[in-house]
Image (cartoon, rainbow, N blue to C red):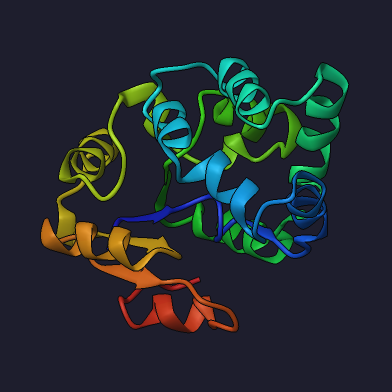
Length: 200
């Protein structure tokens, strides 16, 4: 095994408290989960993750969709991310992995992810390759996004392992021969990686 590839949202960075998002569901009079779905999984969210609109334009579109004032939109954006936490123990594990393996990210994300990883989370330097859907115009589980990452790593599919919290993305990786681990807490990730002969 030569490389370990990580998803970001749901793996490295996880939502621990949905209160800020649900606050806006209630405030807007919509069913619980609607705001989160609209940001990520609606046509608006998909367009942003494919890079068809910038992050700023995406949030502007969200504001228009929910008929929010500029002040309310800024408050929503702040509340939306307030419950997310970086898994620092996983970050420590990646630091150890980097001593022996190449590391990468494949993320369905907006076009500001690289900046967030670099300036806010300060973990971009832990990865040899960072593949962001908005920069490439293709999203998981399309085979192309896995293959371009492997090409940049200089790896064959069987020489890497991919970690994601979405079963569809796991299936997409496995379809090209890329071993994959479905990340669901309380997964013991070091143990799961050891099954693929990844030694931490």
